[in-house]
Length: 478
Ligand code: SF4
Image (cartoon, rainbow, N blue to C red; front, side):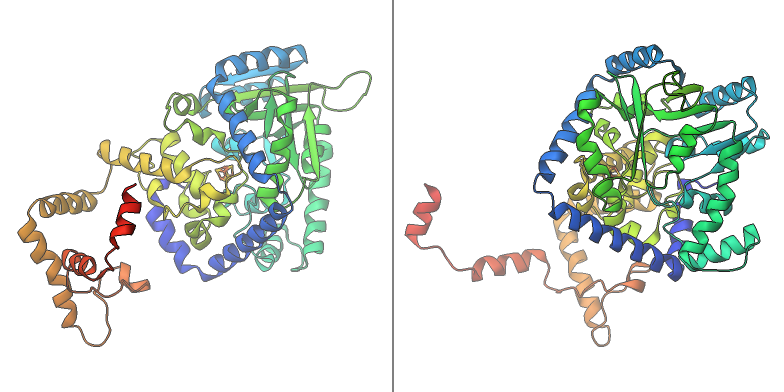
């Protein structure tokens, strides 16, 4: 499934017309929000954790060059082979060369949005290397040749009836919608692949510069098998995932599961600090780490938007967003979706390709309130919107509308007539009908114009409001 944010309008129409999708997304997001709220209530120091996490991320990003050098040095001391990739193309080339050198034929993958940036599964399959997603949600969307529709719950847009049908059609098993039976089917398919894979590929949740290690958090134990069973492990990491050290990790290990799935802690935490040691005899023989830039340095250099790199991909801002709740993740047209996605799309893909993205928000501020690392998403969206206009990428209708408004606002007499007209026109409409606006008033009521105009209403309000007594006035002045 190849999508692009430039076709967002089409995807939005499709999503809005799909009542089944909207029902599934609404149910899943409301459940996630409730579970999260219950857990947050039990943590009186929640705000303190958010503050700490924000500071840690900010400090690391402000000195990322220094931390990256330290991290590379310590990884190498631990026996981890570090690769650097400027962009997706270079990353794919490095991965393919490594696989050819190590004679890798089959790969098992645990969930990683960074590898989605590389479109890795399609690339590997085009190069005759079998690549299988092992997270249950990812496995399902891979069967459908879709991209994930949520940062932490890739198959959130599907119901168990859908999954039953998909397994029946794609795997040839009898139809069932029993979650346990569906789980057993997936487990049986995946087990054999784990045992025979030459390489395991994972993402990275956090990487510790001082220790030269990185961690993967997960709930299904597929990450454990991906890291632990194949002879070679490759982790693909965006350079912004770094934190200074292991001591900085605990706040994130609390904030991430509570925000993502409403759990106090994730079921599994894997800290990978190098290949198999003779003393333990466990783990992969080789560990490779690919550090991916792919536009992150550009965002880092942008003092106004750097904060967007603090994201820990918990997905809470998606769950709370009134837009995401209506349309799900595929409507955004890229790997990252929801409020944080629409700040990242134009930054990664450029203002021309991502020009619609910053407008997919009501700017209600719920994403900022819920974000565990306190990213001020509405503020960044306003900045990005202004850049869309500055770079000449806004639509002709918008340009025309604002030029028209600018002209009107600078001609008071004509402005007064223009604002008087809709109210009068409305009086001619039968009954209680509101002023019709094509498209907009199809699904919602615009409200009725008062007909008196803002200035008249304001002046009448001024005349009617109670006058302060002289003692109150004196008090207000002092
Ligand atoms: S922006 Fe904040 S709430 Fe949204 S995914 Fe990132 S960390 Fe989570």
